[in-house]
Length: 115
Image 1: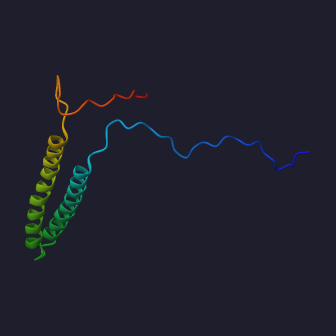
Image 2 (image 1 turned 120 degrees about the vertical axis):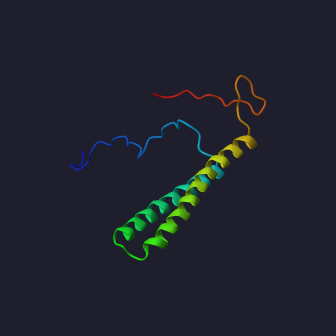
Image 3 (image 1 turned 180 degrees about the vertical axis):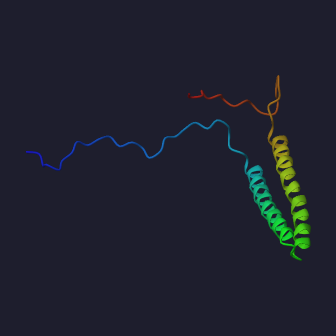
């Protein structure tokens, strides 16, 4: 005789389902430059808000804050350009596929896309 608390055993579902990636992962140097750029841009936006609040409060800190914001804006522009340059350099060094033919490297095997 079965125990009253015995329940039928169901097949367990996995905690997550693997989904195909639509594009390949960024190379490490490019990803590092992108993370650095995002952090610098975020700091620039915070500093711009601080400078705005100091200016609205008519604080003497407004002038140094605005100068710092200008410097951070230059740094943020440099960081974003660094991402672009790093990406281009990586592509040049590791080969790109040009159309209609390429001698840089063989094309990847295309995997079927799942709907």
